[in-house]
Image (cartoon, rainbow, N blue to C red; front, side):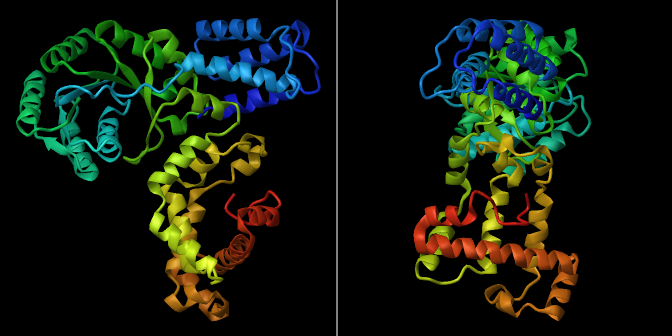
Length: 452
């Protein structure tokens, strides 16, 4: 998300380098470019106008600190105003109530409510260690109830059975009663959506809301609808006391206008971002970290948190001990590293959070393809244990057999072995002189031919 906006803002701010002071003249053109970038990102016009006015007011005439260029000073101002527009801090779910805490999911059809219900259930189980019951009150969409049942099984949540013949309000009441009797921590109620907002829909969800008295009423909206996302959120907020928003399909939206408009228009915080199709693809919304990504400064905090959760610490410790004893990094180790990278969301997700990635040429960034990593894993898995441990024995006939076994070409096997050799050299440097030595050996570059 924000790819286009990030490119435009980074390019625009570069123009101010070399200036000694921010003045009305040298900032006028820059702000015009920032305004156009925001409008192209489909940010609502009132939000753009207020944002630009605030940046201009703070920037014009400001003395640039001795250690900063005007471009950096403006980045600081723009960053702070972006954070302000999106809500200052991460708004946590309010779960400190007598269990069960009820979360009501609302939104239009096709916004991703049912999938988001499952993602949220998984997030609550894994991050907050809560027991979760999910219930579907969508008696209109074919197979909606079955879909939630399947997803509940996938994420390890308890499913409350319902059918298309039941009354939605009755389902919600029965699910709440069941959650109380079973001492479940959180009940998530998935409601029906429509193709557009109508009176019947609003009446039904208001009755469900009254029946279960939720602590959180979350509006689920597709980020790719841009300004319409903010408008539909406002319409729901007029009918229901919304407590927050889940913005879905952000991995497919290069503009990001919805994220920058919703808080200002509705007054409600974005609480989560849906960042992919998998049930683990849900991130808490941190305005400061998102602003940092927009301005090409990365999101190292999220990267570290993700590594803490997803990296196999036991395997990492074993590899460190192995390298410390002077043993060679082999293809089995390389296989584990690739698996862990995929577990953290793949190269695309990692790159988005790294500082300075926006300064790479677009054609380089576009080459990032996680299919390369899966292809590499398939090749390694087609090798024998001996070949993984002693890659030097992999010659012509073995390479042909491995290619056939992995459904790839011999040149793919050759490429993998070349990338592995370079990675092996990096690991050797790290074991001898630490990460500083390794970085010096890399000279700021990834190994040649690595999958980006």
